[in-house]
Length: 304
Ligand code: NCD
Image (cartoon, rainbow, N blue to C red; front, side, top):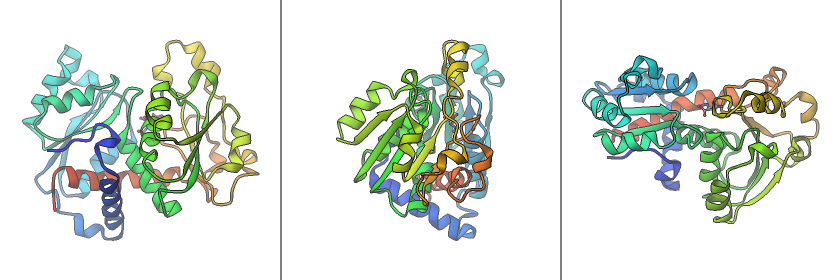
């Protein structure tokens, strides 16, 4: 039985296979309508979510299955003090697969160790978010035609941004990827990602605080929200939150085929006046997120 806790739980070949299934689902949705009939997905969300939870639910429904779960810790027995381990054992009695989001790093891993059904990490604290990474990889592959040979800039909260940590880890396994790390000093990429992923795999990277200077070099710009809920004090958040705001003026020197990504939710990082620019890909990511999660559910449930 397989789970997905870290993006490296999947090999590069398996990711390629998921992307190809997702592309087939996009092309032939009717083929997949009954694939998960009588199967149930439990969405256990101990932290707020719009896209991740609803895309998991939509994915299971489009496969002909059903969904159950909760969308806040307060409405589950966690509010009474129940452990993640006991929750996982309990839900294993009612569902076929779990998607779990939790504010504590490692919680989905604990769930996996105690569940008798596959567990998918739908975001654990400031750590990882592997299904957003699958979404991002599908988007890059559809927009750029390949997962090799490009320069990508990550901008914003690289310290607490779990989507950034997982995507950088995933990209370290492809060829000829260059990375710009664009953030305020206080929100730099954690050294464990820098050392264990970038340095270890000899990935070329440049660290800077200057978004404008980086933009003309980029094939992909991955904007992120400053993760308010992970800050220790509100003052720091208020000081840093609007440090990078992408506006049409800043795109003047950008490549014609730049792909602008954001895992969303956006607060102020991308001006809505960019939404109609053909380079804006963030709402395509939203849609791709449903298709790749359909492919992932099929794989983990071992549906033919
Ligand atoms: C992200 C997350 O939850 O980490 N959102 C998402 O799942 N698409 C990004 C964020 O909250 O900033």
